[in-house]
Every structure is written in structure tokens, then in C-alpha cells.
Image (cartoon, rainbow over all chains, first blue to last red; front, side, top):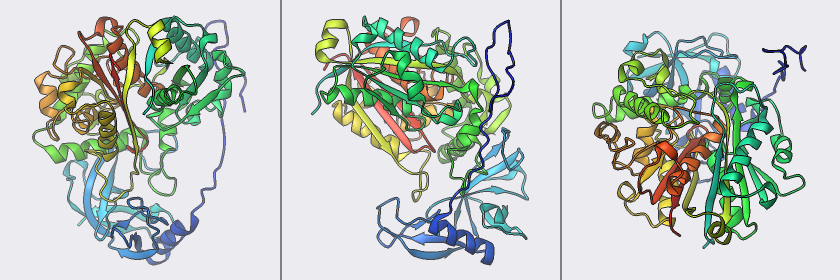
Amino acid sequence: MLETAKPSGGDIVKSVTGTLDIKYRFSYGERYDRFFREMRDNKRIMGIACPKCGAVLLPPRPYCGFCYTPVDEWVELSDEGALLTYTVVHLPFIGQPTEPPYIYAFIMLDGADVQFPHILGEIEAADVRSGMRVKAVWAEERKGTLHDIKYFRPV
Amino acid sequence: MTRPVAVIGTGQTKYVSRRDDKNVPEIVREAGLRALADAGLKPSDVDAVVIGSAPEIFEGVNYPEDWIAPALGMCPGPVMRVHTGGTVGAATGIAGFYHVASGAYDTVLAVAYQKLSDGVPQYGLSACYDPLWDRDFACGAPALVGLQSRQYLDRHAPAVTEEHGAMVAVKNRRNALLNPYAQIRREITVADVMSSPPVAEPLKLLDCCPTSDGAAAMVIASEQTARKKCPRPAWFSGVGTCSESPYVPHVDMAYPESCVRAAQQAYQMAWIYEPARELDVAEVYEAFSFQELIWCEALGLCRPGEGGKLIESGRSDLDGALPVNTSGGVLSSNPIGASAMIRQVEAAMQVMGRAGEHQVDGVHRALAHSWGGAIQFSTVTIFSDEI
């Protein structure tokens, strides 16, 4: 794991460069499995409704984080919604799939009570306003990840 | 109810962007020994050690407690590690409080650290997000706090502006000039902040904290030991912790519920009814400038939407009625795992009268706040000069 010792200054060895190279396999579980199959196969965004407090939740999960009630009622959400908040990301770092600058946004899809995280496209950063209406632009090739939506564009 | 517990000694290392002369256990030992010296104790006087650090991915060493415990002379001995995201430093202090308050131990050494220069901090922070959900779009801490800051600014515009965030950055860097442990000690202006390069808008470079190497420590003791060893202990008079989820319905990052609830819990325990009047100083975890205003509102130090007015009025300046971040804050030093304990250390030092050049006169009650995770953990600790 350690590379050949490289003194970083002076006549003593101060540090050595090493890596932890791990490929993870992230498990979907039953709720994400259904959610992402719907995105991939039907271009549908599904929420899950709490029978007790009525909240329509994202990401789908087996219980309501609000009142801890078990939830199992799937609801189709619109792929359109309003921008809750946004930020223009300029900071690059290793492993970032989207090259900065990009507009990261929390979108409140019509029918949902929890924000959906994604990026915006077909708009200049200076023209973005909280509350504006946006709509999903779906990817041609879909694999069952959030990248099945390319980005959200202004309506 | 619990028995009285106090901080009787604190220790810090000089926070720097990269420390080459010492490794992690050596840095932690440096802070720990300083806290013991401040308390007039030796390592053998300690009954238990509580260690706090943020994700192992930062330094690339798992099970760090095994690395650190021997450096503190606690081998064999009772050692517990705490991890609650960015709040871990404060949670470590609170765990030390519980150790003593429960009657299980008399004297506890609480230590927290981070050596961010060993790894890639933003990569580590991005791995805190759900890999199937928001990890690919988020960008470390700045992206999330960019979203939070935008939500806050949009909610209260025009009463709160980007310049108000810049004023926080200016104030805290000015306070850091008086703190020999602070990393960034440089006078800056509002214009400097406003013209610094964007990181995650509305956050600009000078609105953001640095990354630091460093450690902090506190000696936490029972009333009997505190009275014997310390002329003016900082008594734990209120603690509150709260966890929520970033994906609860209608989450409000501009007025986070976990912060409000942690404060309520701590104020109730400390018999505080009007925090803005009854507290003498506050150290809040402002990793990004706008957060100081957001936390002050959620902690009840000013009314919601009046964060801009607060910083403009000078009330939170070092010589104001309620100084905020007298140490220079997270904006001046940020060894992540230790940052929340540094808030407690500063609040305790203010009560003990040991804050040196940044000491505020006549401090009876001091607040330390922290946040962590995806704005889902909050802690509030109140120190008092009397039980």
C-alpha cells in the first residue's frame, strides 16, 4: 500500500504517500430497487407516502423519518417542481462526476414533501432564482441511478 | 438529576494547515498533556479517556483509538471513542460530562483531533453523502452550506445580505489576531471577502473555513476534585444534543430544528429563559460565515431574520454586549474532529478567566454550539461559574 518513501523536506523522512484503493459495492435494498427501476424503465419518479402524517417522502424508505410509522404506499410524483434552493459549485475535488462550475439544486417536485437533489442545465447561473419552475430532462440511456435524469431545465 | 461536573483544564495545539513534526497520536498527546498541566494533574490522575474524531477516511487509519490511547497513558484503561460528524468534538466533551455526572468516574480526559493534511478533506466530506442519492452532485461541505446560505439569504432578503456574511468573516478573523492558537491570523475587509473567488455561491473563499491539523483537550472532573484543583472551574450547567435527517419533510436549513431543540434542552437544564440577555459569550460552529447568523437566530441570541442586524450592530463584536466567536471561530481554525471541542474549550476558558488576550470581562455564562453531518446533528453546552 505504501509507495517508496519520499522525504518531503530536510534530511529526515517526514511523510510517505500511500493509498487505500477500495471499490465499494453499494447495496440498493428493496426501496431504492423499486425507485430506480421506475426511473430506468418508466421515466417515473416515485415517492412513498406516510399513512399517518401524510408526508410524501424521498428518498423512498421503509419508515417515516418524521413519525417513525412504517410506510409502503408508492405515489407517482411529477418530474416537474419548484426550486427550493441552489448553489453554483466552483470547487473541484477528486472523484467529482460533474465538472465545476455546475448548479446544484434542491427541487421540490410537485406532489413531494421532501426535496430532490439534482443539477440544473440550459440556464445561466445568474438567471437562477429560488422558487422557479424546473422540469427533468431524461437521459436516453438509463442505468438505474440519479444520472438517469441528465439535469433539470427551466419550464 | 446529575451531580455537578466541571472543566478544570484545557489544552490546545497551534492550529496549522500542515503539521510535519508530529503524527496524530503525538498531536493528541500534546493537547492532552497541556490540558492536564492546566488542571495541575498528571496522566496517572486520569480515570478514563474519551476520544473524538471525524471519519477515518480523513487520515486513512481505522480504529484510531488504538493508536491514540497509549499516547495518553491509558493502556490498559477505560477508553471510549465518540463519532457524531462535525459535532464529534462537542459530543466527546458531553460524553466526558456523562462519564463523571453518572458517578462512574471522577476525572476524565476528553480529547478530539484531526490531521486534515494527511488526506483529501473534501473527498472525505463528500463520502458522508448517500452514494445512491446526493453524493454525485454534492461537493464536500461547501455545496451543502451553499444551499443553506442561499435558503437563508432568500428567506430574509433584503434584511440579510451577502455583505452581512462578509462582516462575520471580518469580525472573526479580527478576533483570531488575539488568539495565539488560531491558524488564520490576518486582518481582512468586507471588500476582500466580497471579491474573493466563488467556492459554492453565495460562499466565497473568505466566507469559508480553512482545513487544519490540530487537537484540543479538556479535563472534566467531579465537584470534589474541581474544588481542590481549580480556583474557578467552568461548570457544565446545560447540555443539549439533537439529531435529525436532511430528508425529513420540509427540512428548514435556514432555521434548523435540531439546533433549536438542542438549545431548548440546554437552556432548560441551565435555567436560562432569555439567552440573549443571560449569556455573556457564545462560541458557535461557523464553518462558513452565514452560519454564524443562522445559528445565532436558532439559538435565540437574536430573533429570526435579525442576524444581519446583529452583526451590523456590533453586539456580537469582542467588545459588544454578547461577543460571538471570541476565539476567531471555525473560520480561523478547523481541525474538523476537534472544531466542536474548541468551541467548548473557548467557552470554558472564558468562564475560567483564562482566555488571555481575547478574554471578555465578567463572564458568568458561556455557550458552545456545534453542527455536523448534513446539518443534522446539533449540540449546545452551557458553562457557568457557579453550580
